[in-house]
Image 1 (cartoon, rainbow, N blue to C red):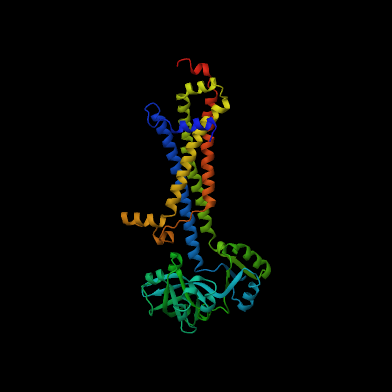
Image 2: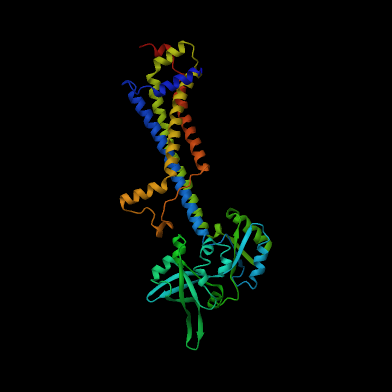
Amino acid sequence: MNWPYELQIGWRYTRAGRAGRRNGFISFISGVSMLGIGLGVAALIIVLSVMNGFQKEVRDRMLSVVSHVEVLEGRGAGLPDWQATAAEARKNPQVVGAAPFVSAQALIARGDEMRGAVVRGISPNEEATVTDLAAQLKDTTLAKLVSGQWGIVLGSELARLLGVREGDNVTILAPGGQVTPAGVVPRLKQMTVVGTFDSGHYEYDSTLALMHLDDAQRLFRVEGPTGVQLRLKDLHEAPTVAYELSAAMGAQYYVRDWTRTNRNWFAAVQLEKRLMFIILTLIVAVAAFNLVSTLVMTVTDKRADIAILRTLGASPRSIMGVFMVQGAASGVIGTLAGVAGGLLIAFNVGTIVPFIERLLQTSFLPGSVYLISQMPSEPQSGDIVPITLISLLLAFVATLYPSWRASRVQPAEALRYE
């Protein structure tokens, strides 16, 4: 196949100098540039993949405990007829499950230990239709929640902090007080721990307690469930469904979806992801513009070659094309190597990180700090494609000025001292 001579010469210059001493330093700088581009691209892919995996893992564990959408009474009181509210919500085709709940904050005490917790009253059968955790525990732990028996299920971390196990008793201090002739005294209720759950999400495992809906209504003195939880076909449609339900059900209801419930956390993750993308892109830019120095030195070294090509009839555009091919080839090689290396590591983070942790006898993700204890990774084409294109674009831009300078070399001046 007859390739254009600009491409052939540019590729030859890219490979030249590895065996000879004259061009060895230029070849070394070119190799460093390609290595820098590759490392920068790989770092971008690995970091963004880990952040994607972290976000997805936390989201999935979060949604195994909480519902996609919650419908609350607008004034904060109980719903007099939650079945009617659920039936109204089910008119939306996205809604596939509904369950009542009572939610309140309380103190849970065991001896000298006392912890704040969110106490959620649930109906075990209906709850299994809206959360994955309840579906897993429906026939085991949650089956022990019987109305009137005052049983409670604690998160595994909360139980550990209180030092209790199944069968032990704990005391719940409900908000508000009870008026007696002796004054206002706190409302206390002794309950039996009938089981624990482990969602894998530290925040819920350490602050959430479940009890039967009827017991929660009596304990917190509400006339009915404080809201209805909804499960959707597509969790990503939650904001749209919440808006539609709010418009259809009227101002007497307050509707919120899971993205609003945890808005600050998700906003912080998105902001951090954007900043990391910008910072690491600058690293790629620095490596790409190292090609400028490589090409400038190559142009200086090849002035005689440029002059000979010009005397043989090569146009300035062709000379410029030769050196653009050389720089672009280095950029393409570095980018493709970075993409390959980044994807290789990103797809094997689950194996590499535990090995390093065992080797160093440390943990990179303490569950009490990062909500999860294992480093996840999820490479996405929406990140990889822009990274590849930006790297190639930066490498191409870096070749423009040196290539233009090469095209301006005058043959007579270049050959004067040859």
